[in-house]
Image (cartoon, rainbow, N blue to C red; front, top):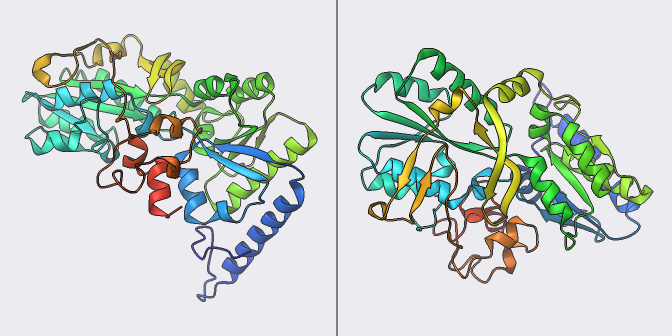
Length: 389
């Protein structure tokens, strides 16, 4: 087995020798050997997180696995699954002269249902600003009291606590000009929907370690028991990913289906108590549209009283060059299907690999994407394109 030289987990000793790297590669080789010995029949695993997908492809792990082991890339990219109608709401806000729209940088190139994106809107004169933390928005709101400052809040449970903290501070300071357009999504509900589908081929889940670091394992235990699939909390380095895969395969070979933590250095069974309490104070679960997957029951978060006074309210009309939508507290309106030559919905569901798309690498590239999985830095299509799978 030929190993990639780009192992993020390698460590050099103080004198510059790669002694730590050698032992790291040795552990990886041992894990690969054990995986090959453990697979007695075909198994299909799904890694949930887009960061894990990129790590698997970057380090070439997918080419070193046993031939019986198939990986499916799940919808673990919050940018990719952000509903196009919600993006239209952000575009509308960004096009209004009294608004400063703040967002993470990876949202700027994701198209809405009209085909426009926030980068284009900024080029047309919209005041769209990239922030690196939700708390950066506080300073912008304080410095611009005459403007509406809207934070486009996107992400899984990992980024939602920072948005919740922003809401608490904005309310405490009485910042009347700060608003939140919330598009946070929750991972366990989408796994529930996917595993309940009779056509689902996934036999075990590699759960996103960073989500479990915040939320813990409680919700996953019920899902593993109900759908009789192992769920293994997994990290992001090559060795951590292989340990997660091996734990999942061993459960499958023994006929077990429980939650197992293969990311104990960061994730605990109860998660982060402070972050969970913060989420419970500020948000409540709501049905949420996931791009390419449809409506996921309890699949999103929405501001609860009294924080709902911060919710951005926008009505999109024909003058906004998009579909007619009405939003209060960020609820979705109708959306449009992706471009006919784009199979992003099937990719997000794990039903197709990116290279199965007729547009992949030709009319659809990171520079000119047709679908969100090619736009985002964590999207499966972008990963396959970058690492030439």
